[in-house]
Image (cartoon, rainbow, N blue to C red; front, side, top):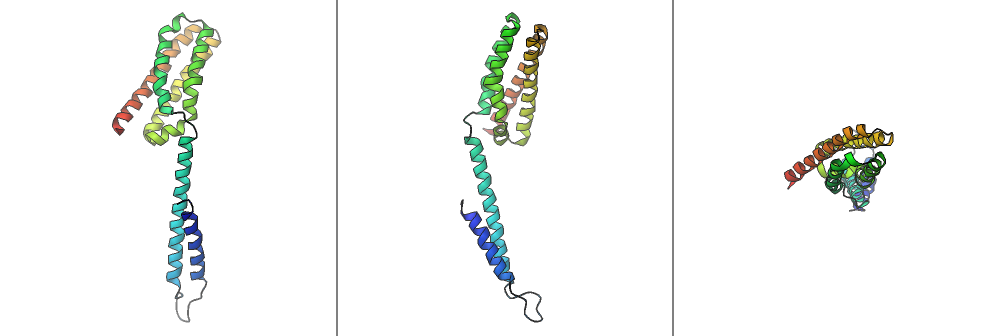
Length: 183
């Protein structure tokens, strides 16, 4: 199928050109090769559709296999460490908060963000976009937590971090609902 689309397209164009090269007979509106022209045009259109489908399938496969990271699994795996940090964040120093948040960002959130197209491909545009918006909010709250802790305001970090965890849990709930609907 990789060669079939371009082959149909070019052969169709050649047939259409050949069919349209003849002038109509005296008193006729169309030449007697109009059928050949139409057949060539249809073959070229079929070739174009096949060619584009092949390219789209290859691009989708490349996207899915280019990175072994499963974005949705990252979200599932993120919940436990995020809740663990939520339980113990009050006893941590600002530096330790930054380290823990960095770990969450580097291990789960940033790889998830790098694979957001995978989320859209697997969940669809509507459900995937809703999940991505929730994850973007959670990431923003996580960054605010890190920023507050690094600036020496641990109380602000303590106030903002639960919002991040709540957003991560909301995203995980959306994922569970989608998984339940697709099973």
